[in-house]
Amino acid sequence: MIPGMDTHPRLAAGCRLSDQSQGHTMLLMPERALRLNGPSLEIVRRCDGRHTVAQIVQELQAKYSKALPKKVEHDILEYLELLHKERALDFE
Amino acid sequence: MTSTIPAPLALIAELTHRCPLHCVYCSNPLDLTRPDRELPAAVWERVFNEAAQLGLVQVDFTGGEPLARSDLTELIRSARSAGLYVNLITSGIPLDEKRLEELVSAGLDHFQLSFQGAREENAAEFSGTRTHARKVQVANWVKRHRIALTLNFVIHRRNLPDLEAMVEFTEELAPSRAEFAHVQYYGWAFANREMLLPTRAQVEGSLEILKAAEERMRGRTRVEYVVPDYYAKYPKPCMGGWGRKVLLIKPEGDVLPCHAANVIPGLKFENVQANSLRRIWEESDAFRKFRGENWMSETCRTCDRREQDFGGCRCQAFLLAKNASATDPVCSLSPDRSSVDAILARINTSPETTMKLEWIYRPNSS
Image (cartoon, rainbow over all chains, first blue to last red; front, side):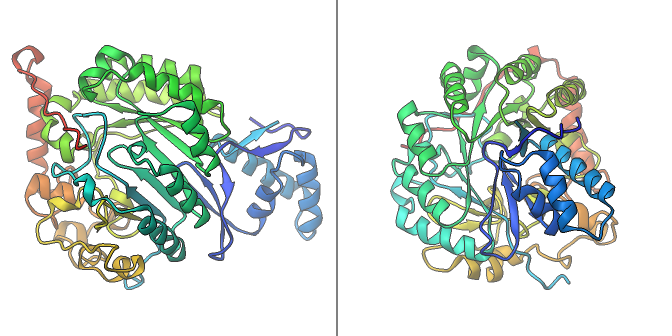
């Protein structure tokens, strides 16, 4: 299920980011915790129901300007799909 | 490498052993903690803060029945203030909409609701109560709030015929997550094992149904299930390994690596009222006992899978082979596997009609 570029990804009910007090940020959900590194954290931070998928792709392409834009787009879409499957994300 | 003690991820907070249900497969020890020995909220608050400092990110409020604690709202609030993600593992009894709202406002993240079956008559036999209809009502109340909801169906020989109905109910309700949990044989479940163990045909049938359900519900509900370990080829990586990912605190404050460890003789458990959580996690005898590989049998120590499943479950090794250091007897490589095969042979050949069913019901301790 490829997310539509005009949809707004939003963290699902009961899913949220941890405090950064321990150094790493984690995505917390029922009985599971995903450690977020640089790029994945940048994606998840923007899953606030206000950014569209297209905007997230644009912002990260600008941020990671040394990477191939097509690869950035592909990786983001793949990651969003994974989070959706895990029920961490809804597309509104 | 093995001298580094990993940071734990989850705290299982057994707030009480009081419970209005009498489930025949309850994972509590046979020896239930008396209510007058339960830790007060002030001690739990200290523990939550120590837990967060230790690196823990999740707390599971469980029991018994955590709703039996009248200070549960306060406990949720302090766990959340400490920075923990709060899971409530509950039967949903007793609860009303007003109290649910208070729990949610206090910061509850996830409500995991147990089901004993798909219909009242069947479920009543295993919980010793008529609570199914109320649970359905609770599930619908929780859906109105913006928190995660899991339906947890405990499945075994006597309710597996209703698995499709359980799946159908789940599909209609569309919770965030559904767990179809084959009973694990500890505590009261071990005492009732002969009545609970599924047949091989039932296990195979259930895996087919659940695999299809998982695919159908993908993107709406996260469906989780595992092969019951008596029927598996290799053991489960119990708790993610002894003293690696999980800490359990009993109602009176004793700290254990899991809910069953009290069956292993010679383990000394420390209590949070006398020690810090960090000290207990890193230094207590009970936690150190099965860390690393020095305790492993020859079979496990030379096995390629040892870093994957850690030789399985220590408590199960004791329950089945009277030796907590042995390879988990459910493992196909275990010298004790034949004893598990013998139990399964009985279950798979004894006609139901010749077995007189007598459940051992867990009593209420209120």
